[in-house]
Structure formats: structure tokens, C-alpha cells
Image 1 (cartoon, rainbow, N blue to C red):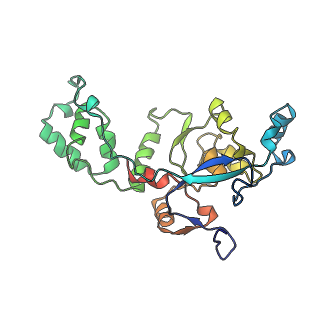
Image 2: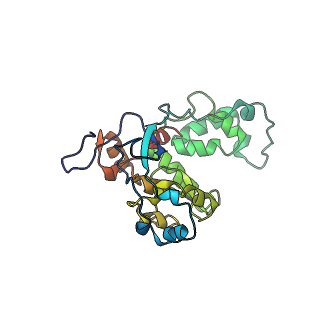
Image 3: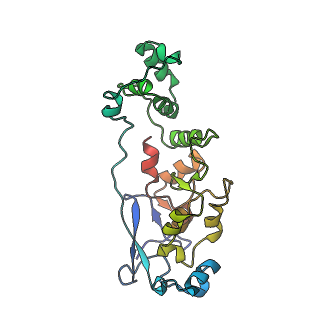
Length: 261
């Protein structure tokens, strides 16, 4: 039987390695699942009940549970730009940029003095000249985890038309996900977990309510109950804990995404 906290809540362990979900179709396949095992059409949201009434597949209301399998334990590769782009593709002369007319030694010194890792990553992506500077040994400052990942994404979120308006950063899984209701989410939300009786529809629908400050988690993270992170202190605190409560559950790939650019 799974260990529980003094208040009766199940323990959520940060280690061993994270998990990815896989669906099973009967409680016998995984009887210890914490998710509801039977669906009742009368308890579904109105739009789901209407879908069933119009002839949706009734087998979606059969018993189901969710099991978890280990995720990839290996970390992301370091930030690299392929040699095919860096060395073997033509470079257009940047005569309008006075910065790029400087000798390579000065560009390297400027790059290192930038010092802030996520600023360096953005600078390396501006052109091939700066990418070659970044590719030199010890040119990049050490990556600082949440601080740099959060800073990098905040730069991308600025009103510079770099990130399309229909995408938003999910603060639970740290991926840019669509905020519009279309084919993508219609297909994603056809998964059985979205029919569960414990689904938080208020938080889920807030994701589609534009770029407000409430919809911080994508529908998948809402479905699995992953907590959002908007501060370095909260993230580091939860990462340091060996046992997390259900309300502090972290996305299984979050630490991997924080540890590398």
C-alpha cells in the first residue's frame, strides 16, 4: 500500500525519476490508481453530456485507470548549434551592424561580459557570427536553472511578435501551448482523463480565457494536478523536498527542462 502523510494524503515522491502517463482500461490492470475508475455521464459537464446524447462512443464511459511509467532519466544536451549551420553554411555580410565589424577577439570579450546566461543564449541566436562566438570553449556562463529558464521565457513573452499570440507559457510544464479552441485541443481532450469526475473545469477553461493571470496551467497539467511555478523560491523549495503533498505535485519533466537551456 502506498505511504501516506499524517493528514491522510498520499505521499508524492520527487525521486526516483519522473513519470509519464499511460492509459489502462480496467482497474484489474492497475488496481492502486488514485484516479476515479468509473465514469458517470450524469456527472460530466454539460457539453460532454450533449456529446454523449448526440451519439458519442459509449465505450468512453467504461472503467479506466492510469498507470505511470519512468520518464527518460537523462538530462537535456548542452546548448549547441550544429556544425552544419555553424561552419558549413554561407554567412551573409552584416554591413549595417557596427558591432559585427569588430574583431572576433572583441566580440568574444563582449559576449563573456554579458555574463547572464539567458541573455547570452538570446545573443547567440541573433546571427551566425554570434553563434560562432558562443560555440567557443567556456564562452557561456554556467546555467542557473529556474532563474535563467524563467528569464529566457519572459523575454520571449514580451510584445515583440516573436511568440504567436495564440501561444502561452504553461507555468507547470514550462512549454508554450495553444490557447485557442481548435483541432489540437479537441484531439488532446478526447483522452479519457478529461472525463474524470475530479476534473477542475474552472482552472482548465481559464487557460482559454486569453492572457490573464489566472490561467497559468495548460489543460494537461490541470488534468494531472501539476502545480504551477512563478517564483524561483517556490520551485527550489519543492525541488528540495523529498516528499510532496498532492497540491505540490510537480510535472515529471520539469527539473530536466530547468537544468538546461
